Image (cartoon, rainbow, N blue to C red; front, side, top):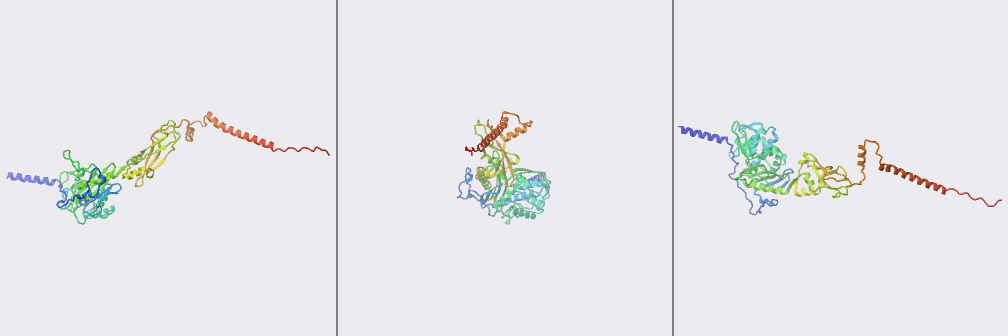
Amino acid sequence: MRSFQRWISLLLVCAFVLCSTPALAVESEDKIVEPTLSPDAATYSEETPELLEEDQLIAYSAILVEEDSGEAIFEKDADTVRYPASTTKIMTVLLALMMVEDLDQTVVVSETAVDIPSDSSTMSLTAGEELSLRDVLYGTMMISANDGANVIAETVSGSIANFVDLMNQTAEIFGCTNTHFANPHGYHDDNHYTTARDMAIIAREAMQNETFREIVGTTSYTIAKTNKHRARSLTSRSTILLTGTTDSPNKYYYQYATGIKTGSHSKAGYCFVGSAEKDGVSLISVVLYTSRRGMWTDTKKLMEYGFSQYMSVSPVDLYNMNPITLETSGFSLSDTAMGKLSLTCVAVDEEARNTRITATKDEIEAMASNLRSTVLIEYTRDFTAPITAGEVIGKMTYFTDSGKAVEYNLIASRSIAKRENAPKTLEEIVAETDADPNPFPPLTAELVAYMVIPVFLLWLIIHLLRKMMKKRRVHNAKVPKPKSRYMK
């Protein structure tokens, strides 16, 4: 009898442990037919990522965009309609961040929220369970929880149906032309579809949200104890973010990856929407219907291609590629550089320091070569010596895509002495006069000369003119006629 009781107790303990542990079952993969590379595909080399070709990707559809501009860098059947699986949750979580101010509010899990297909990914939520919306957001993205997505939908819109309407309206506003959502989690529905291009549009919008970026870049997270479950530890399913261990490093880890979301289902294959950042360049990639490993290898190939094509520089970096050198005047004859002066560009504030220009390498080089067509340069003084190192000579203004003016100072890189026998400039004379407390200028030989010489010259001119006038009067005087010699 006691033996039987012990077995009953052991079974109850096991049941409690199983119920308290979050189920991490993946979405249905039983019938996924994994695609492979075409046998005619050229061999891919990591040494030359810029030579990437479409058939070197396993994915049926793919796209790579530059995050700041949204410009497509690489495409493969990007407008073919496909199923997104759990990459759908990008839109779901984004809408929660857009519509709900207090992410730490407590939400209550409903019966309808946990009514999901048995082969769904889940964070093992229980009807009546109370937890923070923030915990639900992390669980939904990190382990692709379908029950979490339903909780988000009901929290934002009151019902799943209303939330799906909101998803479709938002997709239309974003500019998605071939997308329709049927649920908030992405479990297969024939009427739930998108394209690689549309998913890139949605992901780009989402990555503008700082909290979203934080969530999708997180690799481990702990959900606090609730009224139904003990604390739960989550690990991201985005293998590309995980380094692995020293003894077992993850060969699919990509050091520049920053997110975002996996997806898989028998009708969708394996999908991944990724993001990466390197040297100021931010990229977003989408691969739809690829293989389990292709999610990571395809993504890395796309990202490396993008980084080989694009670069990000500050306006200061752009200036330094083609710096300005001035020809000064009035410089000392001992100046070995013959008065040549290079100007250093310096940001005037934090905004200027943080401003970036992202474009293809060819475009950046063209901007640097034609600097004055890219920025506005104005000088604040003339180029006459003396010039002091660190003195502001002018300013450079860069206009961002939004039209905002960002300013930089152009500073003298060295001092240039004035020529020893150079006459004073008008500005120097005025400055000396203003600084002299005596209202009258000091009596110097030079000043006397300036005063006397003009007077003397004036006197000389007048004297010469008078002499000339006198001679002319004598010359024009009448000579009396002689009287007749004969008397009458």
